[in-house]
Length: 267
Ligand SMILES: Nc1ncnc2c1ncn2[C@@H]1O[C@H](COP(=O)(O)OP(=O)(O)OP(=O)(O)O)[C@@H](O)[C@H]1O
Ligand SMILES: [Mg+2]
Image 1 (cartoon, rainbow, N blue to C red):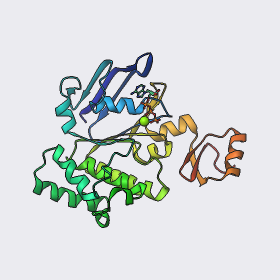
Image 2: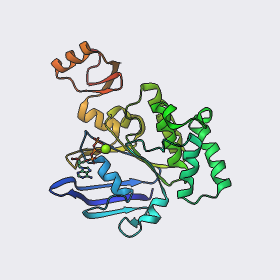
Image 3: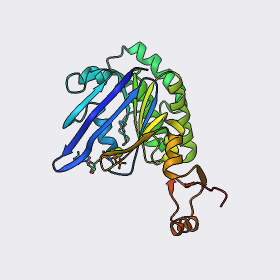
Image 4: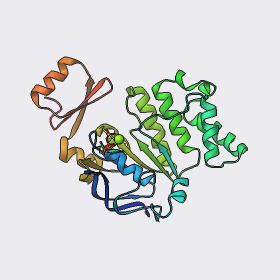
């Protein structure tokens, strides 16, 4: 498959801080590629450079065969972006948010109307079309932003923590939609804190920390090599948590669920 994003020695500095420290990676057309890592690892900084909204300090970065410094407009036209922070317009309804956004891409009105109907159906937001933004649940807001990211029929979809703060049901719905976009051939790049999310969605991922890529691979291989062969799911409660901390067991908290990484799930 052709390479749609390639980075060589990509670096971003903020003053003395090296937020992204000479990383190398490439994303193939049609795959789902993930950046997994803790707060401050450099995930958002990396994808902002891909989106051409934050200039790189040094290194090479090409998106769809184009240099990010030379062709930002052409690149942006082909991207759909779900930012980490919700940035919907609170004064508008669901429908109006999509309509206003379609104008940024100069999509003709009739075409925009058709696409919006299709996307409202796809994201299961038809009943909320006339609701103002503050009346939406967290999951609905995320789904609306995903719908908005798809309005320009992007070649590459970029998702910065698509399900942050959502309950399991809302998260599963978004995962399901992302999988169905992948089946349609959309290349997806996502960031996440959750190994579980990366395992569910990504063909390949890198684990980042302190601006560097620590490892790269398929999720099943990384889970086996890094954290154990199995993931156990259980409800988060203080007793379970304190027990896990005492056992020095690897785990992550996702909403009200704990994922426990282990080689011996029966113990
Ligand atoms: N505009 C900025 N100015 C200065 N420092 C910044 C800026 N944006 C990010 N940083 C710093 O760069 C580092 C990487 O931040 P980044 O937002 O890329 O992390 P992240 O992996 O996305 O984290 P999170 O999981 O919390 O979203 C952090 O130390 C952060 O404080
Ligand atoms: Mg981030």
